[in-house]
Image (cartoon, rainbow, N blue to C red; front, side, top):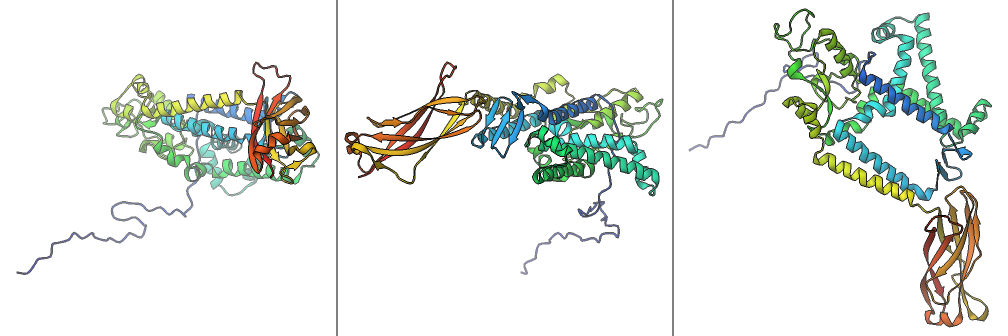
Length: 489
């Protein structure tokens, strides 16, 4: 018998139309084609007021902190040239970068925690990209008008009026960018000295470079890139899906209530026409700074600014419909019709508890480490030129250099001792270190001939003990550092 070959399914290949759209309606979008410009519409409301509140708070801190004085110096100064970092009453050295690492860990845990609870709150209200974009768009509206006016102005041919409006916008943007760059450099160079240098046109090359660089970055990111930074460059949009779940508060559209969509007269009943509450005005799309339609569900491009909630609530008021067609809710809350209380009860779930617990433990550990931080630090360097030498009466002497870093802004005096070998003698005087300064001192350790005999040809461990004198604390500060004492044959 002839074995019959089983029939195989064949996938038909269809030619795409000249417009680039296949017969099934799938659209191909080239990543290289120019994306349409987005003209966000101005919006007022409860969330818009909160957003501007955070704009003011963040910018008052950013622009104001460099001018704040603390004990006769700049309160927040990262002096890279002197290798001193001043944060209010703290004086940090490069060796204290562990605190910076701890702050980064805390920031990451806080981001994870708040994202798991309520989505992209950071992006919507306090991210520098969002804040400066909001400022730049406000300037743009002042000189060029709101959405429709800006669209008409861009489409109109060049004229004296268009040149004046566009020129005023650009000048304002450049001024904001340069002042932002100046304030940024003021965290690394004393801002009062920097301001005098700027007024005298005597800015150093490096300071001038960073003022222009940071100013250009602000101008470009907030003036032109805008939503492109959030959609394509920011990694947070990519991994937010791993941080949220169906019980995270996000901006949602209630499709069960809003669909089917359609325009209608305010006097007509939506139910009689078989329509939902959404009148398909597209205002939620017009106010979105990234140009998405929230009615299509949560998307990577959504930054959680809640502008769509404000404008939709305003439309619902005008139509005499209940607010909340677009609202902060959870996916489970929308599907099951839960109340706020029912959704809040789901907030304390394992993911949130783990993030919150880690954040709490890390915060307490960080605060404790800063509070118990020693007021000075000691580094021991052994003299490599001569490991050991024989001095009078056959005693063995090792020479060390102790570097004492004063972490306070008052002069400190220290007493130096050593232990670890019976009979060990310390030849060192009390030493003082200037405020926030470093003092190097040579210390000689001697071991009598009789005590050195059992240790011939060996390196014995020793401990330096540096004590802070006149310490008013209950437990005086003491630093112990390890080293070795070499006894030659």
